[in-house]
Each structure stands twice: as C-alpha cells, then as structure tokens.
Image 1 (cartoon, rainbow, N blue to C red):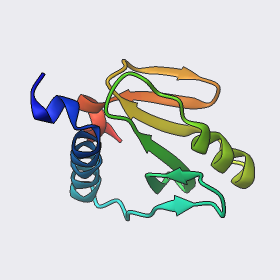
Image 2: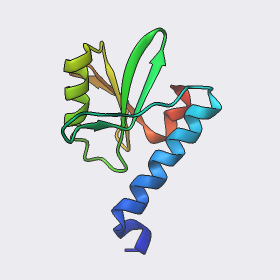
Image 3: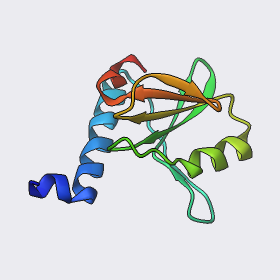
Length: 104
C-alpha cells in the first residue's frame, strides 16, 4: 500500500476538500455542524429551501451516526452521504457516489 492509502486522515481531508470545491463551484454556501457532544456533520447546505446535512466518507464504510443525530434534532426530510458507494436511498439518506458530487 502507498502512504496515501494507509494515511486515513490525509485521504479523508482530501476527499472533504474535493467535495467543498465542487459545492463552491455550484455557489453553495458552505456550513458545518457540531453538537455539544461528539456528533458532527461535514456540510450543511440549503437545497430547494430545505436544510440538508451532508456527510462525506472516503471509502465504502458509511456509518453515519451524526447524520441521524442532526436529522432527529432538526427534523430534516433527508440527508446525503457521499462515498464510494453507488446511488441509493435508505432510511431518508441519499447515497451519492463521490464521482457524482457535481450533481448536488
């Protein structure tokens, strides 16, 4: 394995940076959320008048407890998880593959 593949912090930061750049090119106003505890959401966007939490994952493992915390607290209609997984919609979470971030 190369150093990039083994350094999860670096790869995660680069993935979030890529997503942020995609959002900025679409003129999304970027926001971040963190609870009093340890829950945090990478991005919070306003899409079609709705507040949408977005979690970015660098791989296929996608546990997103923070999305659930945010959705319950703010009664979000849906959330978006960006990862290596394909498109999908389960438990009010839309899965969007990293290569398709430009569609958001």
